[in-house]
Length: 45
Length: 264
Image (cartoon, rainbow over all chains, first blue to last red; front, side, top):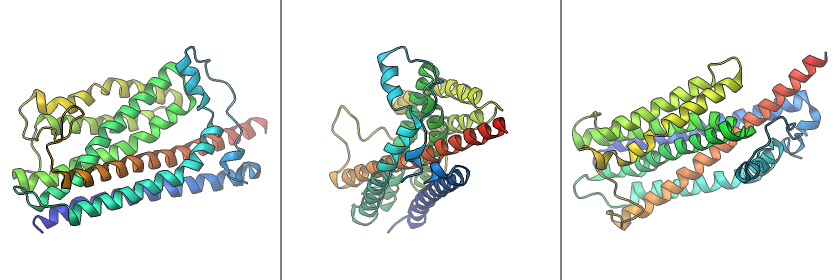
């Protein structure tokens, strides 16, 4: 495969971006739900 | 039961929408209703995003043919072009939320705009960096100040400006309003990006896929490209919906804490 470092860089960056955004969104959502449940157990059920 | 499903609707403190469009939008403005719909949609959005992106990227990386001129470097197209489309789409979504915010005071529009900003900036950065990685072996330069590249860089700065502006005020509502105005003013850049390759002499190639004409790309490259574009589009939606769900819950949490502090 020609230009391998450039291709690997592009696909690697895509992976990093997708995993970074995905994980941060999932962690933020999970943390928000837990904190809401701690404040208001009725809302957290 | 979902945490989201027990959230009480936001009190009707917003302005009454004066138009049919506004009333229709306000049906979906209830945060509790949004959370219920979003919780159901989230697994589907994420699933389609993962499936289409993985299939499309694998197809483009391993099975699509190399270009007769560019060799395998053309495989960068399968991430660069969908990211570029999403960069503009994300900004149009930001502008649409800004319209809903400024005209109808749509309760979710401000939060949606604030959550679209970072995701749109991420895809714009991906477009710029992958374009640079493609440009170096093809043009011999990481960057050229041509109209397409420069207008996309301006788009990236508009995203960054929006992110900074909505967080720059002690009163969040003032930040949302200022951000909405910036988003609307900056929307003029989107057609400039689209037509920059037609209006000016650019090193960047003209569009290979248009709504009006047949694509100037081989089908063996077009199909994986469209597959990745669908995957990235769903990934964008899934990310924004997840971030927006978190933002709605966080706002609800702040409301509860403030109500308790006021009652104490």
